[in-house]
Amino acid sequence: MKKIEVYVTLLEEGTDTIRATDAVDMGNGTFKLLPTPSYDPEDEIWEFLPGSIVKIKQAHDFHGRPVLLAFEKVG
Image: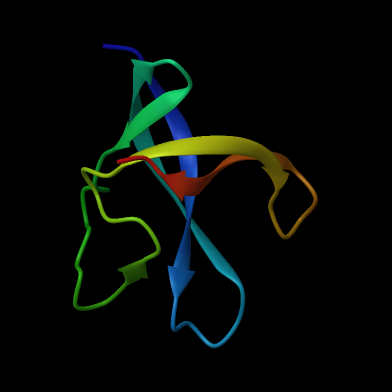
């Protein structure tokens, strides 16, 4: 099981916010999002919930660093 770091957009934050989490490579360009150790659905609303199978794309964080960003749910 190969894990990579992926970012997920957080909703209802008031400003553009992304959260780093791990994802498992499912093959064919898809990844399964894993929860962070402190994941709390009452505190953060993820665009794609942990357990979602997503596609990722190259993007930049708010400091201009390259990141992998979940952008589409599969299935």
